[in-house]
Figure 1 (cartoon, rainbow, N blue to C red):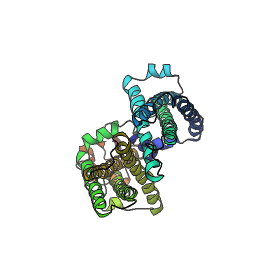
Figure 2: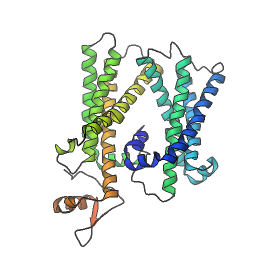
Figure 3: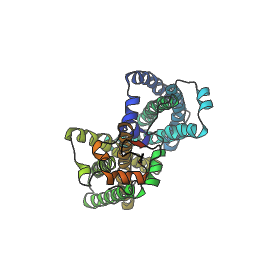
Figure 4: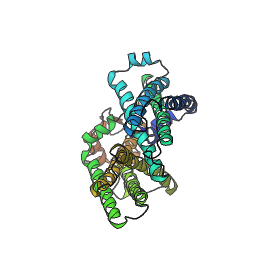
Length: 362
């Protein structure tokens, strides 16, 4: 779901997909897939074994794949035949496989987990209602995201230079370029989340322990995600200065969404995988440790990535501040690491297309 985070947190992408005209077209596009999913469920529930989790997830993935291609073409304002001609097989496979099938299955697990954990509406005991929602909601969400990605690709084809494209490529580049910075946050998140889960399970085994554990781990994960975001966003500041909050209201909003919201999302997807795919009734302690560690580590890594991309966009589009330009030591480091290239004069600086490592930055 990293594409969803990028579309909403990276300013350039968020501005592109929230324009009034884009939102208006997106609302109309989103109406049809949910209705079609409802009709298909009503027609197929007596034919297909949709009370079986694997059959339900398979159908959800197939519907989400078809929906993703259709909505992506709508965002491109092209027909599917034109999209197949203009887009390479890698892009098409990513749209259908990741934004469609994988994302749709994840969202179905999320829906089933929410109903089971917070509404006591277990799909294994009452399959009809949860199954219907596990088809309709993912199709609607996949439509929204595929449409937005299609619109972004259309902008790119019209010559708009995108600092970040929401396909995960920038995250892979960050892994290669700044592995140590990223690994520190991910490692700390793995340890903190796993430890939190183990301590909680050992200390509280009564009623409501699953809900309590989910809330506690997700709060810890959200804190790590927010801290990692601020660290990645301000790499040139002293370590203590990176975490200064100019507006507590904005900080609380960002902590609630996307940090806490997506922490719950990743936690509940894992919960759904364990409960409905593996159907484990007595979850071992090491599984709780793994779920807590993965949730917190993943959110920390994604938070650092998003902060780093916001930093890159700010420098690429806004240029370096005069204070930074007047600091020869910092500018020398930036030139060595490739953030800037300097001409015969100390100013102005030009941002390169390639993005370098920040290993030498403070």
